[in-house]
Structures are given as C-alpha cells and as structure tokens.
Amino acid sequence: MDTEADLFYRQIPKVELHAHLNGSVSFATMDKLIARKPQLNIESSRTAIHSGQHRTLSECFQVFKVIHQLVDSEEDILMVAKSVIEEFAADGVKYLELRSTPREETKTGLSKRRYIETVLEAIHQCKQEDVDIDVRFLVAVDRRNGPEVAMETVKLAEDFMSSSDGVVVGLDLSGDPTVGHGKDLLPALQRARNCGLKLALHMSEIPSQKEESELLLDLPPDRIGHGTFLHPGAGGSDSLVDKVCKLNIPLELCLTSNVKGQTVPSYDKHHFQYWYELQHPCVLCTDDKGVFCTDLSQEYHLAASTFGLTQDAVWSLSQQAIQCSFAPEAVKQKLEQRWAELRPHVLH
Ligand SMILES: CNc1ncnc2c1ncn2[C@@H]1O[C@H](COP(=O)(O)O)[C@@H](O)[C@H]1O
Ligand SMILES: [Zn+2]
Image (cartoon, rainbow, N blue to C red):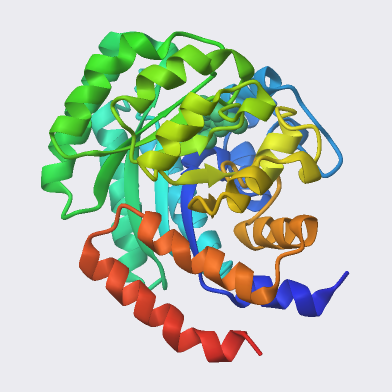
C-alpha cells in the first residue's frame, strides 16, 4: 500500500457529481439496515461487489432491488442519506450532487414527496451540524417506469426546485439501460429543461443506444453519465462525438463502476483516455460507492495510475469539475477560492 499517495488523493478537495443515493450506502450503514430488518434474511455479500469481483450490468440492477428492500422507510432514508453525505465529506468531497429515485412504499406509508423531503431533511441536518460539504440534489427518473411516471417525477422535481432553497437543481435519467427507450421520455425531459432543471442523463452506457443518444443530445443534456459507447472506437459515431464536443457537454466518468459492471473490459481501456486526450471536460465520479466498494479518492488514484497523470493534472481535473457542476455562479466562485487556498497545502 502506497500510503503517501493515498493521502494525496484524500487531501485534494473534490467535487462529486454522479452518486446514486442507494448505490452509495457503505458496509457499516448496510450492516445497521440488515440488523434493523432481520426478517428479510439478507446477507451483506448481496449488497456489494467486492474487489476482483465482476457482475454483468443486469446483475448490478438485482443488487439495487435488494438494497431497496432494506431502505424503505423515512427513518432508513434519513439515516442512509446522512451517512452517505458524511462519508463523502470525510473523503474530501467539498461539493456533492446526490441523486435518487423517489419511491413509494405502501408498507411503510412512504410517498414520493416524503421521500424527497426526507433526503432534503438529511442535507439540512448535515448543514446544521457543520459537515464541511455543500450538497445539492438531482431527482432521478428510472427509465424502467415509463413516460407517465417520468412526467409525474418531473412535476415533483419542479415543485421542489422552487421550494428547496436551491438544493434541488436538476433531473437525472438512469435505470437499467436495456429497458425502455429514451424517445418515450422526451416530453418529460423537455418539460424539465424548460422549467430550468438541469439535465444529467445516463447515455450510451451499453452499445445498443446509439439512436437514443442522438435523440437525447438534441435536448441537449447539461451533463452526460458514462457515455461509454459514444465514440466510433466503441461502436458509436463521429456525429455523436461532434455533438458532444460542439455543445461542450461534460462527461461523468466512473471507472470502477464500468469495469465491475463489465461494460468496459479493463481500466486501461476506459474511455476516460479518449475524451481526456480530446481535452473534453471529464469529471471523475463514483456512481455507486457502496455497491462497487470505492470512494472518490480511489477513483482519482486509479485514473492517475492507469493513465499516468501528474499531481498537477489530477489537481486540474478536480478543479475543472467545479465548472461542470449545477451550482450557482456564486457557489462556484467560492469553491474556486477554496481550491486556490488549499493548493499550496496539498501540492508540493
Ligand atoms: C451501474 N450503472 C447504473 N446505470 C443506470 N442506473 C443506475 C446505475 N447505478 C445506479 N443506477 C440507478 O440508481 C438506482 C439506485 O439509487 P436510488 O434508489 O435512485 O437512490 C438504481 O435503481 C438505478 O435506477
Ligand atoms: Zn449512474
């Protein structure tokens, strides 16, 4: 273990822009949830993919189903959200955009509105407790649930955008990419865009989504999640790459998630290299730090060691992420200032 290098990656201030709440639950929190619900008889080995292990992407979605059984009440969501925020802060994340799919649970009387309110309450409590991190929220649309639910979710997000004091900033499109087609969700996404919600869309996470990505890019999104198969070398096209470049749409890249989920064969084949060489804005993210057993420091470390990035380059990468966030300009400026102050303490 190279502990000095580990320290460097932990010490750099970081911005996390792609983190699914229920995929980010740590082992420690998972153990608490399992102990709360012994009747479910769930083993902790079913809620995470450990080092060296791989799963197909569809197996990853089975893992989320298990986690959703464990997180099904206001009490659970509050605990999970608070712990996840504290863990990101402890890892040196200064600005976090958390995303989550509002769920209704008849068993516990949870409504989608209460779901979002509870996440916002967790964010509020962390702020009150002076946890050193600025947290915003993206309401997530699970593509599997179809156009009506997507529209209903957008309307909820709209309500919260105006009532949450700037905490709800955007909309995420995620869920199993093999299910449904983005064209059916365009009216909902268009509406979200028109009312001022920022769009962070999972795109081309699997090879068969070329046509869908063309359509989604015409919205256009404000950020792209993964984009693994956009470029010609991966079966995408020049036209897709040209659109992304012309519109300068940042990519959220999640190395461990893609390798463990087997959409990328190995770290050195990750599309980070392609886009980084084009000098396109790339933001390293964790996706699901709990499920994939990682954290943001580790993702920076992995990118640096795989692609030979200098400490200066790593610093620039983390700093550039500020401008890719959905934070208001004043917050971005404060973060830039923070980075400038910390630089001499971290870079030698
Ligand atoms: C691995 N790649 C991925 N691709 C697509 N969607 C993903 C994902 N990882 C997570 N999610 C989405 O996030 C949900 C879990 O968090 P929340 O319950 O919303 O907090 C999953 O059910 C899925 O919809
Ligand atoms: Zn994701």
